[in-house]
Length: 466
Ligand code: UDP
Ligand code: UDP
Image (cartoon, rainbow, N blue to C red):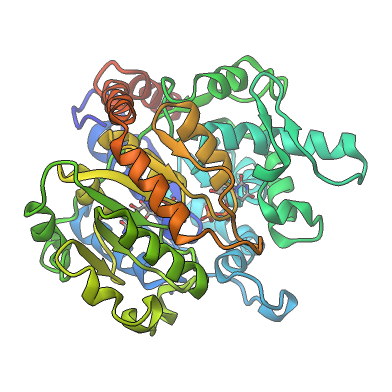
């Protein structure tokens, strides 16, 4: 987003409430910096310490060090007995702990003198009533696609009509059909902690002052229009498509940015020759599937930069790369590949001219970053909202999605041969590269001054000023 200061009048104090995980923290910190530096707002971010992952704690530290204008509010959680949810994902547990602690936010908002609150979707249904009690308008930042937002908003209505008959394909009115196979796995289990939160938040959306969504009109015209017209849910609040929220450089991080030397390595590769492979910050891939993926990358014959994450939480990752990927793999691909287990600056990688393809799990931030960089995506969704996002990638001309490839919970392994063939096909497809570049142009136009996303954000800020 532009950093041009176009505001008039007072600086409204906007309090941002992210939930857990980099997929949520990253768009919130981008919004914080954009509102503070580019749209004339005073901004505070409520943070829960310690964070679940060490990536989050490094990110928060860097944000507050580099942007002193963005203030930190400490959100201390009430005691929470995790044993109620044996085996649950640690990020879901944190969501639940934050949701149960929401009443503690009331005094924090009052003390901060908040003019507006923007809550993460994950906390929406519990934060909205607290903000209402304090008379503070509450918006929601939806951290996934507009397609997912339309699904989330409609799902409670769908469930009410199905009367316990199970979840099949979902025809979202005015949008398109989300096939059963794209419905987030957890939603097939009504007792799942994610399902309970998801349905409550979906119902809560109608009470929000507005919904910010990290997408742009040209990428997702149908869901954005249907939400705004009230076709998905009649009387739906205003929808502000403000993406792609643009990355923020934290100078303080500079020295520690690239211990693996991937940027120097990319510099040495020919234009558009490298396949960048990453499944985000919290997707653990089974050891067998990791080995098939390794075999596929090797057999593709292409250069690749692979960020391997084999655990859900980075703090738990003690595995040895050589052991994970099989004997001799790293030696065989030496010279044409760089494989790392560390944190990378994905933005820098996607902007690098030698990257020609992004093999991605389609976490929504990754999709928006690929869109902003005009890099084609080969979608391999694994869980949650990722198949719905992969559908956006395919429809929006940002890349290809091999729908037969399995996702978490399915037994079938995708073979190295399948992976290699698909990579070769997409890398050879010049039209795919051109279409993705066009999406990149549309993303830049949306966030430039006067673009759709720029104006949407300015509209939101205008409402915060009252
Ligand atoms: N990311 C990164 N380096 C990594 C892994 C992830 O910069 O090594 C960033 C990525 O650019 C994105 C975010 O972390 O902004 C991950 O969010 P996404 O929605 O793509 O996926 P999630 O990790 O939530 O599944
Ligand atoms: N989500 C939602 N309502 C909820 C929780 C999540 O709509 O109550 C959306 C949200 O946009 C999130 C997506 O579902 O990005 C997938 O959630 P999940 O927890 O699987 O992944 P995460 O975003 O935490 O990596």
